[in-house]
Length: 191
Image (cartoon, rainbow, N blue to C red; front, side, top):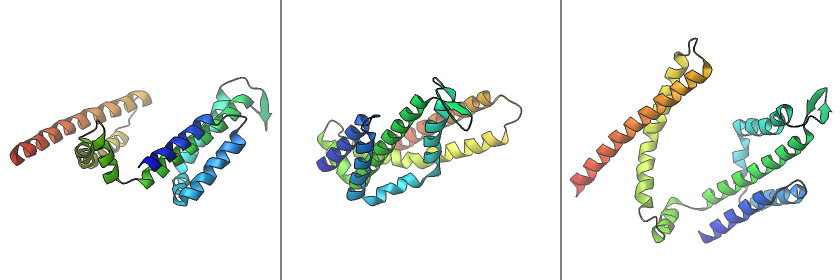
């Protein structure tokens, strides 16, 4: 556990240290470190949603913000924000790989044992309860989203999205109340 925490700390320190001048050294160094420790961690980078987010960060921000001091194919953009976006993407990738490396190296049992030694004495109980509640919350979110898509109508996008968020929050709170009552009754009957 201590070794995993040390590795995570090193990757977080590398991510925070990346800037415009040292990015050519630290970013490849972090990638080599991940490759040495566990190559399977790189699979997290195969998600298209991640690359879409990173592309928006690199490309969209310089187009709409900052001083337009450069041009490519007739499109003006901020070169400073473009370079800063690349640094931010590199930091994001290093943090993501560091967290994935950390979570791939520890088991929940080891994490629960470590938490018991600290102030988080009931971590394993809380974690097991949350893992039991998660499928119900996921089901509520998905079913509410399907309702949301069917009832779109002529309403404003933001109002419709706000309505969806409120419905999800209310339904999750109702589920949490029922879940809490159900589990407190079980604990009372077990005692």
